[in-house]
Length: 309
Image (cartoon, rainbow, N blue to C red; front, side, top):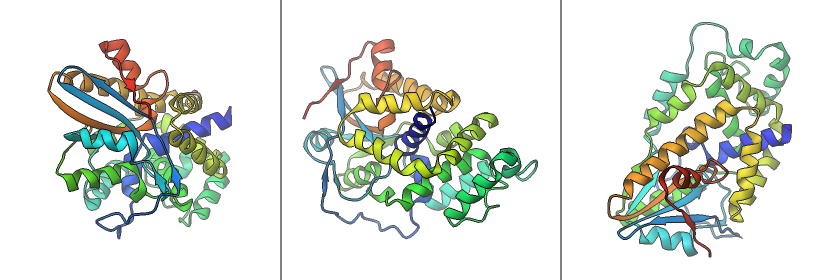
């Protein structure tokens, strides 16, 4: 059961939380991404919803990747080039703006410290994780649990060689900017922060404890989820996420299911406007029984057809 839970946490970190990776992007990141020769072919899944005058592509992204994955080609590239508009989960703000907003929401200057909230049973585990990441053990004492969980889900990923500048959103945003495509978003920064900040504290703590318990296994779990994405296996990816979230349903509802339902409404409304749109959201949102595609089918009578390539 624990391994399933950890895989779900890993999947959320990679596929359902661009906000977390935005705050960890290197401050000295270049304006343009250096071209890295593809060393591994990837064929992630892509779908299309269309009528007589509207086409909407649905592409599942990985917010961070190790350099060298060759995914921006074939059907994915063709769909992107066919589109007039790129729609992301969120448009990345200026780093200073992002940090300011996070500090406003995440800091908690009164009440028990984070370590006190975790309790004595987790004191040693928490200390060991913080030391392994080179962080002072009290670094998150005056922050809410969601911020610590979000950060601790990202820092090990970066340590393993996963890079936000190699992530799908970064690459396609650069391409869209170069080609003069319209870029819009399904959510704002404040909305994404709010998903975490308004989560009940007991749910935040449960998720943080899950990450602490499985810290040493994060690497294999992340590699497994990326393998399923690269191999175009949304069914398996959905199993990993759905099974993993059984023990933390509040996290899954807030970060996945509820948002998928809202995005299906957005897509249904967008079908009333002519044009071709490339929607790129975390691959976890396009996998499982409560995926965006399932909500489109169940609640809006729209069929998302997978593009085979």
